[in-house]
Length: 332
Image (tube, rainbow, N blue to C red; front, side):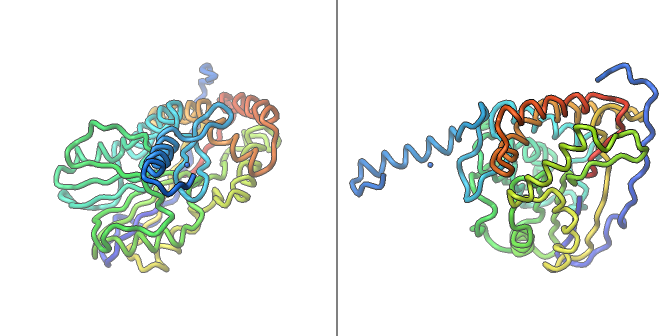
């Protein structure tokens, strides 16, 4: 993950080395007709609105229908549950923090890119009553009952932004790897829309599987999944290694005080540390509930896989995800 300011200030800390995670010895929990008349226009608009609201269905999952490009993740109830669970996972991983950028006690305008269910916006609006918090997504899956200082918009953040320039105190994003095809443009737009002294913070999984102790066999299904899904993501135009470039992109855009921090997210509860074990439990559920949603569209459209072939393969991957003898993790 990376954070940076639009003006020079002391960074919270320098780049951090990730720590080695000690494994537990307890593995018992295997764990949118173009007529010209007004009536037809209204009908077309109704149809468009319905498509945006309902999305499109593939492989029994619902995907967002708004935006220039296809987004690889679903936008249905299953995905909403997974997103909220991931929110809790990050809160635990970051030791009860929603963000790490030092934005002070009274920010005025906050923008959340790819807000998902909007849960991060709602929490930030509660935490900072002084802030007007705006969450943006291509999927209209956010709640209507929110704090008075929180609101949501449907928009494609990869298009030209229409918000006032130099107006936000903080621009935040989390887990946009399957959504963004032009990271330099996104970072430049962030820079242009932050006020002087404002902060940007990107949080994301770095999509390259890791293991520090040799317990993960290179020929296991999870390792195969890691290699195959990265290949599919590249063909989709959304490489999972994109966070590697964030620090350079921030600096090239003009940001200062750029800080890059790295954490390890155990893929199941193999860690001995109680907090990381719980993080691992959340992450295991994240995979078990969400692996089809995050993979089927990519495997079919990126690599031409048959749906049945993909489903069988992912079932075998899940077995590895549950194996507490495999001490694997994804970096954040």
